[in-house]
Length: 347
Image (cartoon, rainbow, N blue to C red):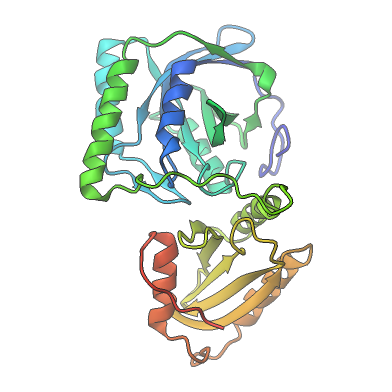
């Protein structure tokens, strides 16, 4: 990611100079949160912002968990807003000086090292919302565990400006200070996790480590996953990132946006694989119409564009032999909702 904008059509005059101070207790609780999780995790960052200083200072003191009814998968996180609002009201009643200053979430379960286009769009909407009290918004992205710590990136969003600024390591410092309410919020998070367990907890299996192939090199598809995710989210609004829990393969699905009922699924080979081809499948109303191999090389975006264009020319009664509507729907359900059970591959 460039230091400034990835998706902004024009560059604002300048971002304010900012330094960030993070309580180590925050990172310790984040690490504990993701250590046994295979879905995206996150929370509301609480602290203080001093804009009358140069550089401006954002202090991160603690956070509110995503809540017992959060909607989570390996490709998305929708927090329990009622839970977060209730806890924030309680915290501010006890400490009126603390404020909502940002959010954190994790990509530890899907291997994506940057904010997605959807993440950036959502955070831009938040900082520009009349309900948000500040002018600066900090987004903390956690991409994995590292020793006793976490791999973290920090992004700054500013009211009235498009895009975001990825902060440098020199702008981040860590403090030993633990907010008075940190133990209380840890306990509230524990209660939320236990409540979620009664609803069907998805945190039971420890997140798999970064895949390693035989020669000890990192997963060869990691960079391709990043590039594909960013390109797909720019090219096809509403694309959703998925993970097949049985193979570990990262995939994406999106709808054509028209009245033709077309839906596409593009899936990489399983993590750690040296396979050279991805798969692009076309569905209409849940029925599999086409299944193509896509080379994971510099030609793949042109191939996807061509196949998507071809798909719109298919007759209404087109079908792939041997794969009926139930097969297609079950495969998508198995990946997007982490469903268990058998699966029949289509040729």
